[in-house]
Length: 615
Image (cartoon, rainbow, N blue to C red; front, side, top):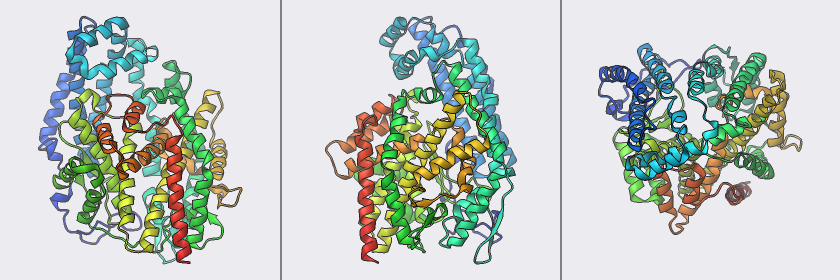
């Protein structure tokens, strides 16, 4: 089946399309058989929600009472997550359906209500003597599935507030999400978008999705014009967007101080017991290895025949034509074949995903853009949203999302619900691990130098975007939070200055590696991740860990596969750094970073060899 195409303005093309085969859409009926069944389940949950109020005041009565109370909260959370999964995925499947959007919003209100009703749990548990709580853990088998939660609660007890204060913080969620919502509205709906005329005569309205699509063009003049126009539109709103980002940062400062943390960074990382030095070490390691990135930029310029690289030259492919195109059966086969080093158990789970409609494959009018995987429907199976268009990037995206899906599958199958949910810190390991295996498989079976060069550039571009670029984002995010903590204002103009300095450092502007013009200083205004409270660094640490773990599995090191599969099964049963140490990588040490940069250097050597051979 051909993918749905879109016109230059982003609207659905008028070309008639065959209906999407049922086998190529996800089976939401596995969650609830019909929309009516979902609505009935939601109404029942809403009716039962006040029953949680009866738990308050009982948790410290005995070990059995604590186990019953936590089971009630856990069961309600699991049911709410299932409801939210159905509503969210249904709404993502057709954003034009007002009823589906309303169902999602109603579930979001239930989430806030649920959070408010259970806000007493942490402070009530912490009102107990630690020795009593530890004795309960030893005496009551039904508390075993909550052990990590309870032990972590004791660790963070000084940051848990009194019940009334916790309730206020829970209610504050109604307003502290405002800046992110306003950015999303501006970014996706109301920001005036410029139109550019391409060399072939087409006119393109530069929405974020169309800019992302067309910036890869091999026509350099088109790239330059698109970059200038796209970022110029943000420059016109830098004061408003700067104030909005400042309000978001101040919200993070408020929450960090309310919970008695010494910094926003500490508050954001402490939930997973990540030392702040891990964050700072990432930045230091990347700074020390920027010459490796600059070498890639130089080779990229050589391959493209460009003497002075510009920022707009970083997204186009090294080859003017993409040598590979795939149907979904081919993409599925490549994912399965590349994952063979993980063994039959992993392969069997992949087969279920492809054969039992875990995946919604194709773009269509009204469907949400992008891709994601979710295992939030704990008792069902993971789901994957794709907008597959047949190119190699689509295959890598599929591989990435299947890494998340398999992580959820093994975790949900092995862990009880309270310890099944894994952190973002480890989530990106499973996804980028899969990408490493795919790239190695594709290079091994490449038919000629052109295909090898394409695959190498794909791998290196992934490192540029995931390791270096996300670390640059992380450094910017740390800087603006520390300035807000010192009481400094963050205007759009000031944010421009800070971001431009980082752009130029990371891209070797002063050495003439990549020219970064002043007009790109406003790129920060187009990045949604800056509203996510120290989220992006985990992409970088994730790819470092994944590179080390994948290399061990590919080399068939004794125990490497078993350790990795056990990591997938572990879910959120322990702290992220500890889970990764069990798998064989320690992100508090320099070795994983050194291994990643050495792997990148080897790929650069091969790329240079190919360029020399085909000069």
